[in-house]
Image 1 (cartoon, rainbow over the protein chains, first blue to last red):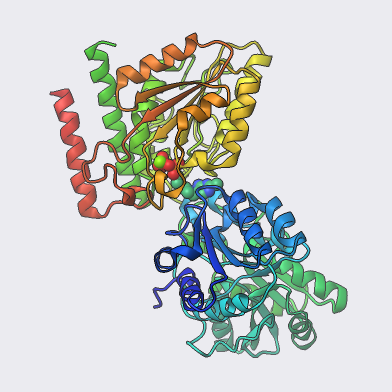
Image 2 (image 1 turned 30 degrees about the vertical axis):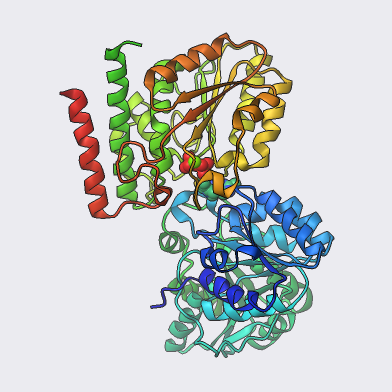
Length: 319
Length: 281
Ligand SMILES: Cc1ncc(C[n+]2csc(CCOP(=O)(O)OP(=O)(O)O)c2C)c(N)n1
Ligand SMILES: [Mg+2]
């Protein structure tokens, strides 16, 4: 099993590019160890800024640097970066169109046992609702690398969230079928579509396999691009498979599932069920324990998908 | 403070370290360095300084309050509260477990004796200012103690709170900086220097004291001295050693937030047990 967390892939890409491109700067807030960015800080001390434990300062300093033509990547735990610094993201980054890339590390419930202060289960909702902000949740290290290369090359702000722990590979190196802002089809299917992002993608992929063994043909989409979401892929899924199950490591409010539901209900109403974290502080435990507790795993996804198909298009009572 | 009292406090703090180490070991997760730098001060607060503390009635309105703004210091706070009688000592073994009320960071609605939830650094001093303001409005006599990490005070909100406390002359508020000189990624001096620290607080309208944060008599005395200060808040800059009490953890940046491996746990426990035996001997 893969032992390289996605955050390491971020550091690797930045190190590859920073030698050539001196406009790349990395900013941390006592987070370089947590973000696996120590090697970058060592290799490129001139392109590294440490602001101390000060996430608001972090984001606004990055915005100032971007306004002078640099390409700042500001990395801090997703929980603090997305909400402590929200005003700075709204005004200094998004509204001002400063090319800051925000790297939220240890996102979702990665810091499980540390409790709700360290969970970031509203970052998609907060940041996606800001005009001009893009939101990406890559699924594995290979895709993270492809995404990072695209983000280094473009010139508008974005938020990227990764988890803390290594996740099983979804792709093999060089075989990500990565197209910027397009969902990746992991499995073709006609009975239902499972749309997942971030660490839930691998679980959705496994659920697709479980369902296949039961004779159910599920389409599985990796929607790493939560905003701008791949509308066409969502609408194709609705038209061609008749029902959609979304899965994410986020609150049920305002996450990827909400965005999918809005598109579907407006343009092509079919049943959509959102699997997400409930509207209460998530229980504290290891991420695996927390996922299992809420059924955010391959068997939970497969069960929900099967139930949706059996109820032939009816929305479940519990949702 | 006489030697008998000092020895008594020292025993309690050593027991708290043992329980904190055990809790982290059983959770296989937790912040040990900053717990051990802070636990002597918490011991004095809960066993000597703070008034109207009643473990049977943890929300008694007239109690002195303690805000652990550096909310990751639960491996010091929870053992101290358990030893003070707020909840059973055995429960510490469930620290950070999925079905436990003893969460990783301080939570006021789950853990008896915790006056404010924390975990996102930089917010606690503001909450303490609110409590102190409420005390003034209600003409209540309680005092409010807020403990911050030295890295933590890099957060801007700390200085917003510092201004507010100065403006409202909150002489019922005592801040404590656990000045262990380390944070996650290195020394505070490397990551973001704080000096001249005393002058900073002074210029925000605070009276300042500097003490050895492991000297029980000095800790108790400074909180008494603070009571004599009128019309301004007091900041105690406590010089401490991160990981204090376990030789290989002391002043070592690697012991911020990861749990000890089995052999490290055994070695640390042996040192602490030896220290306790010596005190009891
Ligand atoms: C707002 C916020 N940002 C970042 C963190 C992550 N974090 C936890 S502890 C810590 C270092 C704290 O250093 P210090 O205040 O010196 O604590 P101590 O040395 O007493 O453990 C950091 C950055 C956090 N908990 N909250
Ligand atoms: Mg410190």
